[in-house]
Length: 296
Image 1 (cartoon, rainbow, N blue to C red):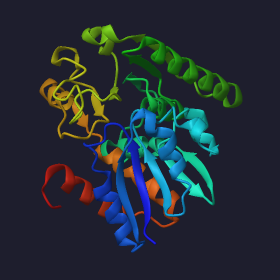
Image 2: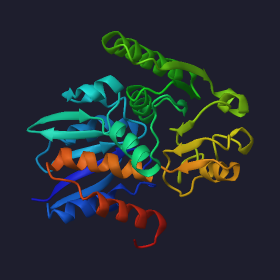
Image 3: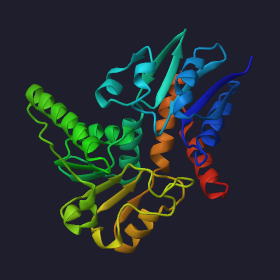
């Protein structure tokens, strides 16, 4: 019997996850197919329930379901509970377990691709959805000096800032050395260079600029507000480079796209599903090939 893993999201036409996940599954000759399961909000409950069927192994979860899917699962691991978002579902028996590998993927890419250590750095996070939550907690755990969070819906940014502040206070009380300062600010302020004047890292966590999205071809920031001394990390990976990264290059900033994070989080998910070591080099090569059309 064929077995399946799927990506649950909406929309997901832009996704290249099947290309590199299938390469990893075939590398280990596992007889599992990785598919795109585009899922409307009305279908979400049924698609998650279908994961319990014998032929399904698990799933990845992407926008816009990383937070709302939590109550549909039987158990969520400690990190995913802390973050308040999952991106990986693993079926154990007839139970569905939720995990967050975005935290690992984000920091792994930041370290391996740019050798950027967040400790003591000032960061602006654009967006406050599921992936932004993973980014915020990853940076707080690694002792960033400050996190400024914004979102088109200010209440979301405020809620994330409150969660991060609570985590920092608890960590500081237990260890005494976690002093990340967290604020939320209005999205309208991203049109001002003042919002980014003193930051070391800008992390873009929305879908603005994403291929096949309603805001394809757009950038969340204008050229004028991007400091030349900053690292701009756009978690949108398709297209490459994104409109934001093109502007960041023009501004003289260092850039990092979302492809390495996608692969590193995917590798961690692969190991949760299969119990086998992910062939990361194979996955990276296939992901780059799928994105650029050039064989690596």
